[in-house]
Image (tube, rainbow, N blue to C red; front, side):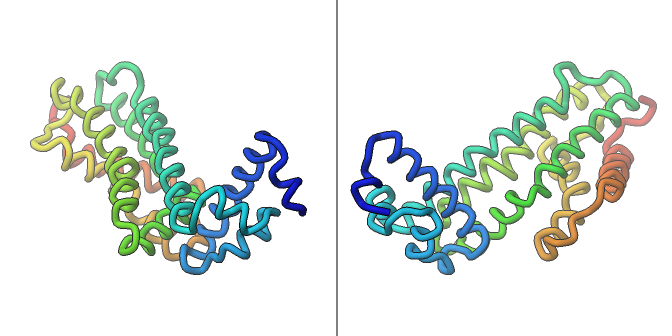
Amino acid sequence: MSGAREEHGPGRTAEKRQAILSTATELFLRNGFRGTSMDELASQAGVSKQTVYKQFTDKERLFREIIEGVTANAQAVISALTAAFGDTPATTRDELEARLCTVARVNLDAVLSTQVLSLRRLIIAETEQFPDLARRYYEQAPAGGIDVIRDSLEPYADAGLLAVRDLRVAAVHFAYLVLAPAQDRALFIPSELPSDNERELFVVTAVQAFLDAYGATGK
């Protein structure tokens, strides 16, 4: 690939930038920050190493742009959780149970996404070098999901369907009753993601346990 061709027009520059970002995302997720070389990146992206440095200055800046971009995409999961709670609150315990099962499944499937699991492993591995990125991801993704759950549970506490002293603690309990066993296994054994039947069991038992703990009696 000649240098002249690489610099031909803004459209070509945008294509190269996207190729670099896509390839770098794949390599960072697979090999980590230290295990990814700019030479390999340039070769697989089909551009010169000079072009990579011209676009992103250095490997750290490229890594930051990718993680910040993926972190921003966490809003899609937040929106899905919000939608799963519905436009109006459920009015009976049975309706609430069904609604919580939907929310739990959406959350579980999102967290067990192959890309999300790989990203979490990567961020955890690089936390010491990039603590600001790790904090930002935590605040926008896991903590952001808890915030949505907390806010969405509040109408049920106000209506007396849930007996809750601390809404955020209740939201954490709800989220991790379903997420913890599946997420832990998937982080360490990514080749053994739970089946649909296993996921449904995680969801149903978690929601039942949550309502046993927090469901107001007589409702």
